[in-house]
Length: 210
Image 1 (cartoon, one colour):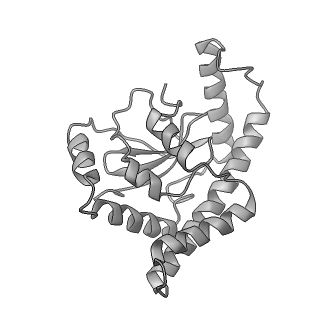
Image 2 (cartoon, rainbow, N blue to C red):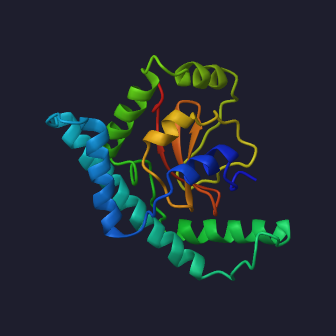
Image 3 (cartoon, rainbow, N blue to C red):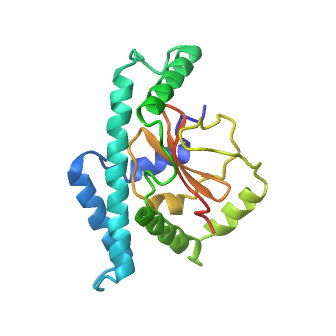
């Protein structure tokens, strides 16, 4: 089931595990983004300052979505464990997705990936793909070339059997850390933000990959 994290994601989470809760983290994310984008000892350019602000904006939007997700989940019967019958897990997943859709009926692309956040993400992605020291771009492009075209929409289901590009570890390391409820996915050239517990497309950054 696509709601389960991949081994690659688990490894990355273990290496860089940090809580994504509260406003303190939003400030920390902005600071870390500034350090990554600016570099040591260099004064920030306008683009770098704007990117740090965009990532902070993204963090705030993620926090707001997480509050909505938690409120929706509290309305449902609690699953005792992952050992529940598959049909019970599937029913819970569908019910959660329905509650979230009801709470954000007008959700559209750009709600989480705001304009400033989109620019920041594109700059991060571009820096990784242009790095001559890794084969991220070649691997992703080769896998994308054989992928089946899939049409996704915000607030829609994220299909279990979707054809997606494997997420490059070097890119995952550079992007903002997400709470357990959310995950990044690459589908074609799009960067997709997925609610793993609801199997729901939360937002999409179209043509994020070069």
